[in-house]
Amino acid sequence: MRGEFIEKLENNPIIAAVKDDKGLKKALSTECEIIFILYGDLCSIPEIVAKVKDAGKLAMVHIDLIVGLNNTKDVAVEFIKENTRADGIITTKANLIGKAKVLGLYTILRYFVIDSMALVNIEKQDGHGQARPDVIEILPGILLPKIIKKIKTISRVPVIAGGLISDKEDVMNALNNGLLAVSTTNEEVWDL
Image 1: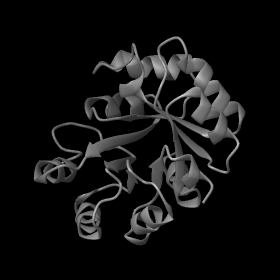
Image 2 (image 1 turned 90 degrees about the vertical axis):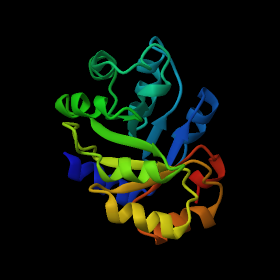
Image 3 (image 1 turned 180 degrees about the vertical axis):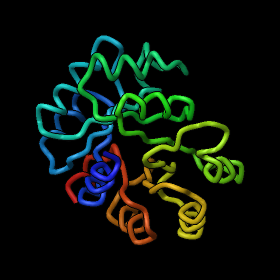
Image 4 (image 1 turned 180 degrees about the horizontal axis):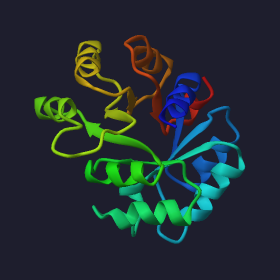
């Protein structure tokens, strides 16, 4: 299952990240095959995911940003699995990865790379009894090539980038330095 997800990322390295209904509508009309859902609530998320799936795209829900599900409990992941057709979750909470994997969901663990402690956390991502995510996402996505290379060296899983990706140069910087894909809310980048 993980191999299919990685292959889809390799074949579609620009991921549309949507933060409202207007962005969702635009993303559904692009060639982006993967949609990161960064908005919604307990009541609306099943319908948002349904729109993505009905358009034939892969739906990844950023569970931390969904009102009513943004806690550290396994039940939030169970809700996504049982009440939506989502393909996977995105989270900053490592403890949710294991539950999502048991339920057959793809997993992305997000890291904010703001200091050297973030690099330490990336390096030990599958330690302390935590399940290893399918992919990690580093933010901001406009990191210097030297930092990207360091992260690629210490990560045990493929790496994508998100946050502040605003043009073709940012996309090429990430991809040329070995990252698998980029996610962005910038609609202009979706059509590159």
